[in-house]
Length: 90
Image 1: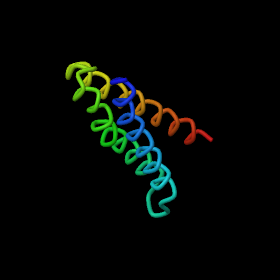
Image 2: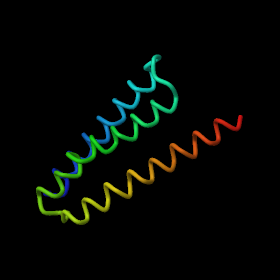
Image 3: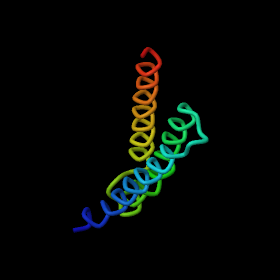
């Protein structure tokens, strides 16, 4: 039961990131690269407290927390950069 309550924090982080991402994508004043960079930064901002609930409850060590946040941010960065390269070739 402890795992389920901790996953609520992760779920709130994911939903918050998705809502912020949709808001950023609909911002007409931002360039495409600015939108992608802001979405990437929002991932880190939302997932620190989201995954922090797992650390708080002792289900995840701080070292694992840092590794997961870092790798997931790098993954999203590579994905967004690759999407930019594909779109710029069209």
